[in-house]
Amino acid sequence: MAQVSTIRTSSTGQQVINAKAFAALKAKENDSTQSKRPVAPRALAGLHGHNPKHNGLLAALPAADYDRLLPHLEFVEMPFGMTICEAGEQMQHVYFLTNSIVSLLYETADGASSETAVIGYEGVVGHDVYMGGGASLNRAFVKSAGYGFRIKASVLQAEFARGEALQQALLRFTQALFTQMAHTVACNRHHTIVQQLCRWLLLSLDRLQSNQISMTQDLIASMLGVRRESVTEAARKLQDEGLIHYSRGQITVVDRVGLEDHICECYASIKKVYEGLLPNK
Image (cartoon, rainbow, N blue to C red; front, side, top):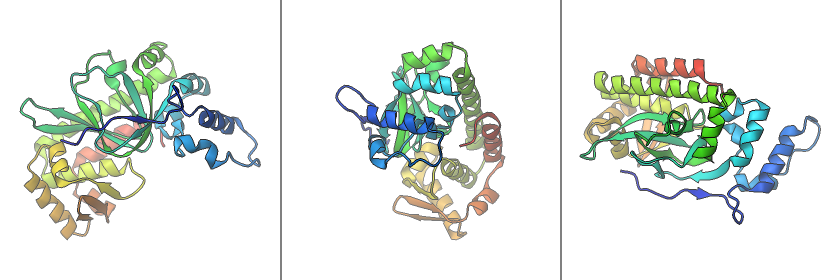
């Protein structure tokens, strides 16, 4: 199990958000004159160059809906291994990711686990909050470090209840997420370890800006719900074919097209649903 770390926020006094940075960001978005100089990078230093609109769902909102949410968003650092929520817990915040990746894990009573879905810039962590407010069914932890923006669960529930654009965006994302979960369960039951590993790698790559994934074989095995030796054998096969390079917990995808030739139909089905339901980055 990954080491649990605490959430770190960018704070000034009692304010979690760097207020000056958001003011500068808003001014930049409202500036329709292309010839003017951009906001100095230092003005946005508190956000480490990140913008809520780096999240696909927030970026697709109408201006009025986005502006209503903006004051409630809290910029957060999301280091690798950070546990956002344990199974059975009530989430106090919902997370809109920008460049981090969160894994949803189902864990059995004897400590075994299996990844049910991954979430990145395209979505939100906390569907239990707006789909009924019950306790989380999964453990959510950060498997690729980055940043995001969180909002209090009570605020998001109120916005969802308005029945406007945000509600529709969240419902479409949830449908896509459930599709990913269903295909993951089927893939883990019926397809080879090599096919499962290729699907896992490609779903991660789709949410990264590089071709490198930092992950140990032990953790991959935990996510796929298989023995470490099985992952080692599958990774060696892909490396021998020149598709990946693996060294000391660092996986570099050398030939993505080659990986796609090895996968089952699950990855293509998941990707088609996401492209049909969610806005492009």
